[in-house]
Picture 1 (cartoon, helix red, strand yellow):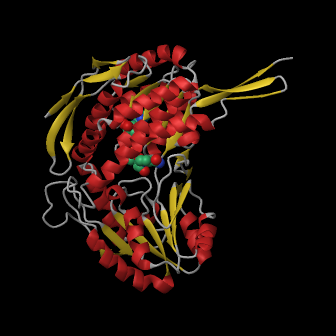
Picture 2: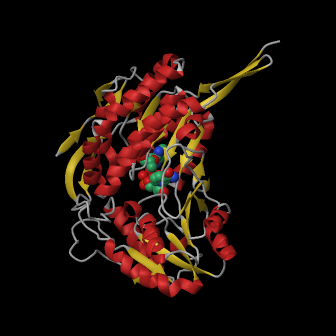
Length: 472
Ligand code: NAD
């Protein structure tokens, strides 16, 4: 049983002023594993004051100094990879393989930001004009639970690289993981007040960050509903915002795809992080001419998607993060059936022998129409909708017929054709033939998937303002 009662403010762990206590529940069996004392407005204001005071000096550091700090953050976080991965598995049921990758990817963000520092033209001059890129100010970083360590490292790396100081509000469902990470980052010896972390509710700590005039920028990862509130409420203090929101990502399987590779690849993208991933490819667009073959291959390939203990490296799908999320996913499976989609694999209820935790059956629906609820709304669980199309143009139309535009995939053998289709998809990132990553490539969404970009120089530029000095 772990008990967390403090926040990280001005370079030290300090007792919470807020007194509300929240239980931490293990999703594999619903048992209590810890308690966290939630911060309040007073804790948040203290953290903002520390960040504001540190900004006066930190904003004037040279990029070489910030590169050294990023290097130290990378080293400090790297020392706790195993502990961080274990905390993710225990606290939200992230499967071992995915959790390990996410932690490493998050830590790598410090190294990637260090490299990106040299790609940014910090000063440009012509005639008697000099343009410099200046840190925007104190930044509030608000994260979702589904890859909290990654979001936290990524946002912190970009902000520090830009010369900003930060107050982090991690997801309240990620308190244990955050504690491990902050203990690690404390060892990096940052100047006091550059990094502050207040654990608490979004409606309390998050809302204070959004409304406080001493916070210049909010970088947020989470739902569309909260993203809209941040944009609206932040307008009163003219907040700069980066919003990384939801998705309903299409995977376009072209008619020349090799199904033995393409179908497992599509399923891996659909069931990424047990389907609790913003980028999950939850709409699979299949040519009508190959639908029967695809259905058969899906049935066979689904045998590899075993559900069970997330700590077991062979497990593909773990529990949902909470009872609420379990119910949410069940309601969409029921909705899919009511609207006339056909269950090819899975369905309602717990998988056999897994009644104790928040486990759901990975479910594949066929005969889905793109205007059905299960094809339009983000479910955030292992539920895939297979949608048939007539032609390449029809596939592109269906892929883009969504309020979201975060991620998309194209699977096919003719690479020129795959590129042609990819270039017509309205998504912030499109992958060809399998999910892959590049820490310098931008990440972010079109349409309701968000505002702004993260990663590499794009992520750093989201934390700067330009200033022009003109002489006569
Ligand atoms: P959420 O929006 O409920 O919460 C996200 C964060 O916002 C939490 O820290 C929460 O405490 C905080 N919050 C809640 N109300 C707030 C308020 N009024 N003001 C300020 N902060 C507030 O989302 P979630 O359930 O944690 O995460 C799931 C969602 O996140 C999904 O929609 C998913 O697609 C999205 N997501 C997007 C990305 C991306 O990169 N685009 C990545 C991961 C998750």
